[in-house]
Image (cartoon, rainbow, N blue to C red):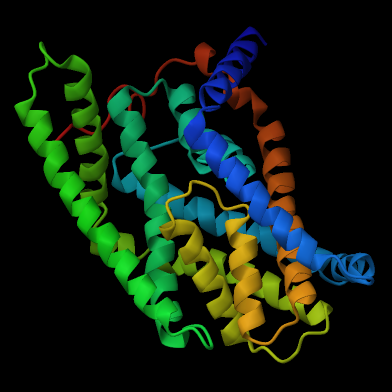
Length: 344
């Protein structure tokens, strides 16, 4: 119990440390975007429509939620193994559940790495390398979403294709430049004269080096389970639209809506998905001819059902595995703790 109390105290300290400008600004932006979508959703029959959606889709979506979580944790586990981390299943599931509960808030997806690091007493190198496994999840999602978005585009908005190409190219250039500069500063800075800068450069180099290790054919095998858990959200949205009486949009078009929406979340440098997902989905559904209020209700229903049920299931899982959170009572793990994969 004492160990768990200390862990909770550290979590509270971590949350207070995140209450900075880079966190406050995304929260304000998310609240504003979400508020706009909610204002569009307000209509005389909106409450009854929302209730109808819940009744018609709840059972199927909660079943699909288990498929989503199983596929997603399988991908994360594979990426961690590729980076040299062999995490026991109970620890893996507990930390994964924590991340799934917080991933919608700014930088919340990395909560799983924070919890994993605390449970295994990771050193800084191990922590940043495990963080690359989480980041690589976004890369795999982009590999699937970009081709879909480029093939289908957005009706009446040809600029979207060029914007996606431009942003992806910019990110590639930024990452390559960061890789070069991090290694250069790591080697060029004196540890005695600039200890903090040298340490930051070293950690950045380790993070990017871990990413380079994941550029392999083995990583591409993770595209299948990634596609499975992404497809779950497509099916969820399709079910919601049919429950709202929208039949003029095909499954492939719904897939494209989700692909462009997920790219907006990943490629736009705002560390949150709440608000961005809703406003993107609203705009895309309207482009396909769905009425504004109906489209807004569909996106809010997706948030309520898909995200809400994910948090519920993850919360139950975390409660079942709560003993795993007693990190201070556990000896460091030989394969996943202080003995991180050797720096390159």
